[in-house]
Image (cartoon, rainbow, N blue to C red; front, side, top):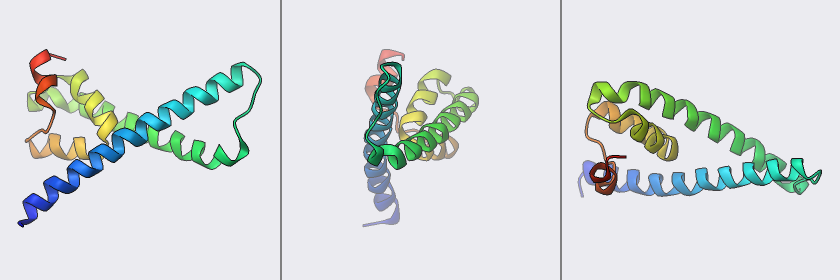
Amino acid sequence: MSLKDIKEKLFSVIKVISIVAIATAIGLELWNIQALTTNNHLPVILNPVLIIAHLALSAHLIEGIIAAFYAPGKNHQPIQYGIYTFFVGTIGLLELFENHSQIPDFLKKSGI
């Protein structure tokens, strides 16, 4: 197994984990907002997780903005690549600057 094969498999695993983690962080943030608007509180045990979720969402948002800014120069749709990078994180930026994107084909075909 070559280094390139290992890198591709590792990137795929990281992408799946990242998508699940960011979706979970978004859900936790929505739960926190709902709890605050109804004068409830999240369980205290979730406070450290909520802080990590804030940091992860902030970092991924910045990465998504950077990707959207540089995507037109690499022949990608800015909004599409920004959203992709928001969910997969740094891997999306690495793919953008390596110039061989792994955006799923159904997104390319649908024009999103």
